[in-house]
Length: 432
Ligand SMILES: [Zn+2]
Image 1 (cartoon, rainbow, N blue to C red):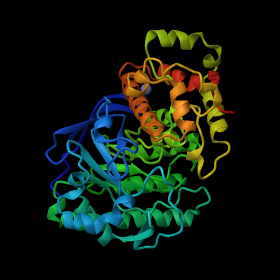
Image 2 (cartoon, rainbow, N blue to C red):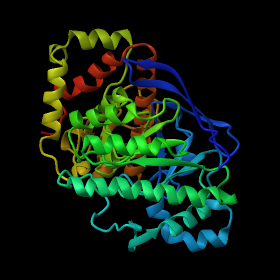
Image 3 (cartoon, protein in one colour):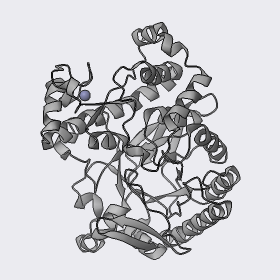
């Protein structure tokens, strides 16, 4: 491996942990960069669901890194091998950095299928078992710019025993060492970067051990696995992330897998996470909903926020109560539930609502259509509903990340948090 070109330059660290900066030197020639905290572009086989490349590029502020998932690519290995020029060209992606992860964050993976030598991924025709040799052969075929190393991440359910968690950390380190060995001897992967995976379930000592050991290896960055929405409450997640990031070098990025809800993103940014996967707008779109939460940090909003008694109560205790309330009924398919950050446009009340989804939003959907029209498309099952919702949800979500960076830069993370979380308390459009 010719040494990592990827470099994280931090411009600001807020309260010792929240990091603002730019990830530089991305892509084969190092010409791309990505601002952090930020997210990757979520795709199915290189395509943002519902959107063509043309439609996608009507949106501004898109991330420079596209995420593809091995579980979706694995079934096409033979075709890709025949094609020879890698997945980026195969999928018609041009000016983007390609990141290849193991699992799809929007499709929870059944557990109970890992062994000492293999992990399983689920493609459209069922389970596929990967050894390190097969995993690395796939990476050579895909030719990403970075990839997540093979990992045993089956300890995210809170009933995993200490013994099982320890085994998952050991296996993941062994997989990483084997992957690195193949990687270092492979010409095709010379300019490609590897992200090591930090496991450890909900056991603090195992998290710390996993982080410390992974940091000793020649990796470009770290994936924090097994902390996804539905696996634990935010207080525990924050505690584990703080312990883990203390063990990781300052100049390498930390990518958190499986967390996308805005309140959780904010808490994880404060705990020291740099990168997220942007599957959340897709989940929202799939349930026929539209993201509708405030993330402005302008003085006007600040005044409005201060004037709201519900928001004034949002001290630390208030946050904990809210998180308990939100996470109180943890179930494994938690991600399918509607959240406080969206509105369900199928509801009858929207049939004569002639406002855009979000007033002032600059996306194509909000500039051209009203809630009533989207309601009509949804109740008649028109495909355009998914297209328009995905345009808005993607624009809104990436706009939120721009606001997070601005808030960090201007020391206004608290204002942003009150804006984002305050709506949850005061919102009249919530489902329950
Ligand atoms: Zn919009």
